[in-house]
Length: 82
Image (cartoon, rainbow, N blue to C red; front, side):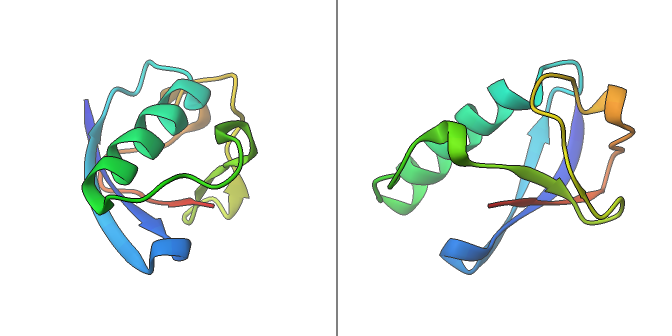
């Protein structure tokens, strides 16, 4: 497990999450969207498949089909969910 900060510009908020680094980014995005919608009591407009997870440190969009560890994401990194 790693702890990362996830900024969600559409909600104008930043969250801290503990994520499993060996799970595909695609799965993490779906889980994050569900948790955030429950927490903020909002509905997700559009499809989860249209969301991207980006690394602020690496300045790139993370590949949906590989894990955070495979892409070099580390503990305390900052990510964007857009």
